[in-house]
Length: 135
Image (cartoon, rainbow, N blue to C red):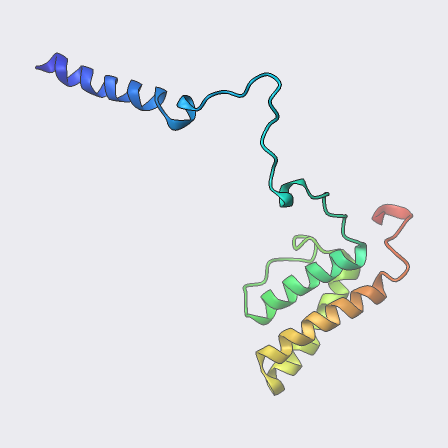
């Protein structure tokens, strides 16, 4: 009886591992093409974000976090921000808090979106730094 108890799990394991539907599927012939990937998978890769777009994304994220009352993450470097981006964040957040107290959270979030985009575009209008330690 003990021998039967030990052989049943081993047999079930061998059957489960070697008899999946993928194992039973016929293999492609040598000249047969692989299936075509979905259109989204074959699309060209995304272009890298510009410095202004990176700034906008980061400022929007951290401004919303702070507006929602999240525990401060740390200094601007631990948030992944440059000094320039942190300056934009502080300005946007100050304005968003003022708007929230007068017009509510929805208006403050809308302001964050607008001001982050506009202020980052202005801050990076001449591109990213090209000299010094910040390039």
